[in-house]
Length: 440
Image (cartoon, rainbow, N blue to C red; front, side):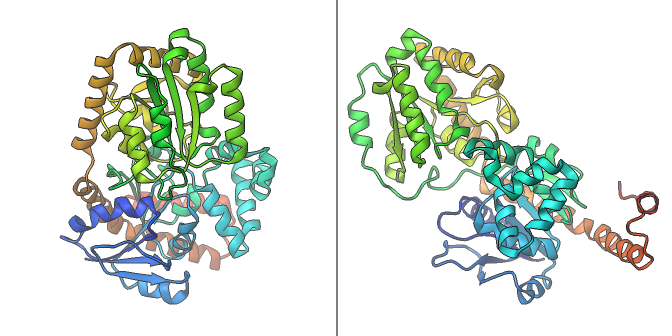
């Protein structure tokens, strides 16, 4: 079967990283071409690459020659042109993020269709939410925008005409169920092949920061972009509220940050008397990240709100063999209880404090949980397992094509008769079609 996979292929794309791991197995049964937005540099790929400058009709017509088109999407500007193709040529959509709000809004601004998108959000979520979409400054800052993205994920825009959807957690599957003509498949996304998420090193801090740690220090490391959703403030308050934790636990927030976030966190640490036990490192290259993780005693992956459908960074950290603390919500709840220490986000500070006490006081518990975490990833995540799920999703997508043709034909006939805006007629025709053609 001839299949086109449309995805970003820039070196910094994490979704390309994991998808490429599946391509060798996919090539056993599929004749694959990878279509990608043109970049100055592309990743190496085991399948032919066909770059395109923009989502033109010529590109769309070329993709229409394939038996199946697979679109890889996350909430990144790199995916905007891929989204534009998915909207005009239905295919199988692989969603890496539960919220696509930022990417879809950016794409609408670029194509001059923001008014149409705002009108759609008005109808679904109300005028107040729609006005926030039009003017993100109404959220009051980065934290408000993150909350808005969780409340108005806009994934329905990307998948409503699709032949099926692939997601990476049951939690995400429940969110998109019923929004596609086809089926929803949950696939075990593999671990990123070589990194924890950052490529550009802007600091040579690891050696100094780690050398300054006392011999009895228990180091907690949080990795990824330092923003309001990372819950660093919760970690600091949990450390400060217990004497033993306040004396022994040190915290490093590793990753890029904006100046205001860093300033606010450093002020909070100072107010809690933790300024000597906390640092924000900034960007770190792969070598630095490995040093931080190797020295870490505990890793913290606390996300609220949750905007991704599965955290590849979490999987990488589990693979490190270190114990991980997570919030017990969204896809994090699906982790086995012996793989991560789960904390109730509604009682975050007390829960994190209890989790830290459990791990700080018992080195054996840290080792046991770290081993379980590593074993879980090694058993459940691989490019081969991911490819098997994509094969299944591809077959289901092909089976959904008759539904697409039927829906398109019925819609066109209703438009010609002037009945497409008559809700009672549309409901009656749709119900009859489902009964006659077993579309439920």
